[in-house]
Structures are given as structure tokens and as C-alpha cells.
Length: 252
Image (tube, rainbow, N blue to C red):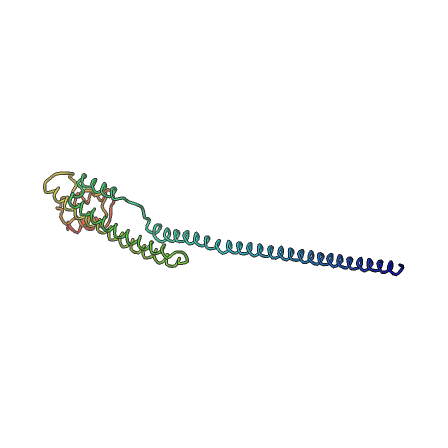
């Protein structure tokens, strides 16, 4: 009986020891699993922070890269405008004169008897055609300039120089054309007026508006009496030596 009792007690002690070992094993396994999960979470958080940092850096670099381009574009346009203003507008003292205004001035000249209607129309047509061509040339240069974009300010200066030369040439030719046509028309009007005996009695129409060269060019058709009248008037007013010398030469 005693042996049986000891055997039973030994069996219970063996079972109790085995159960305790399994419990400790499970606790250790859970501890290892919990540590692994915490490490994984920390690693994920660290990688997420690094990714956000790289994204913010990329956005900052993108903003820094686009800002100079916008600034450069604005600077180029401002420089182009300044080049045109200084290279074309200011040197030539350009102003805008509409077709209607030119026609109005010529119509007024016709109504005052300073030019015939046919001569005025020919003059207006030539001015309009020449002005249209020169305008197209200048606009063409500017369109090519703007089409090539920023970074070519040197091209802008060259185009502005070409435009200035073209405008100067056109202005000189137009001025010469106007002066020549006006001189011829006024000289013809003077001769017709003197022949018919109509109009003002002074030999040269619009005398006060004429240059010395224009006055001299009209002296050939005057009589000695008319030359003396022009000489006396010139002495009392402008008293230009070239005009007086030319009259004295005609009278001598």
C-alpha cells in the first residue's frame, strides 16, 4: 500500500513538472513574437518617414528649378521691350499717325489750294503703300524674335537695329517723296494762279511755310517785279542769305 501511494504521488509530480515546462515555453514564444512585431512596426515607421522626407525634398527641388525659368522669361520680355523702345521708338521719335489723319491733312491742303486733288491722292496712295510695307517688315522681325523665345536678347538687338535702319530709310524716302510732290504741286499751283490772276497777290503761295531751298526752286518762274517783291518780303522777315543771294543773281 505504501509503495502504491508513493507511485501515485510520483506520477502527479511528473505531470505537474511537464505542465509547467509547456507554460514557460508558450510564454517565451509569445515574448519573442511580441518583440518581433514591435521591431517590424519601428522599421515600417522609419521607412515611412524616409519616404516622406524624399518626397518633400523632391518637391522643394522642383520649385527651385521652375522659379528661375519664370524669372528669366519675365526678364527677357522686359529686356526685349527696352531694346525696342531704345532702338526704334526713341531715336526716331516715332508717333502713330492714322490713315484717316493723313487723308484729312491732304484734304485740307487741297481745300486751301496748296495742292491739286489728283496730286493729293497720288501722294496719299504712295504714303499708305510704303507705310504698310515697312510696318509688315518690322512686325515680321518682331514675330521671329518672339517665336524664338527667351535667351536670345542679342537677336532682339539685331532685329531692333534692322528695324531702325528700315524705318529711317522709309522715313527719309517718304519725307523726300512728300517734299518733292508738294514742291511740284505748289509750283504748278503758283504758275496757274499767276497766269489767271486769281488768288493772293504774293508771287509764291505758302511762302512762310517753305524752306530756303524750296523758295529758291520757285524763283525761276518769277518776273523781275515779282523777284523784287519776294526780296523785300524776305528782308523784312526771315532774311535768309541764301534766298537773298539767289534773288540778286536772278536780277543781275
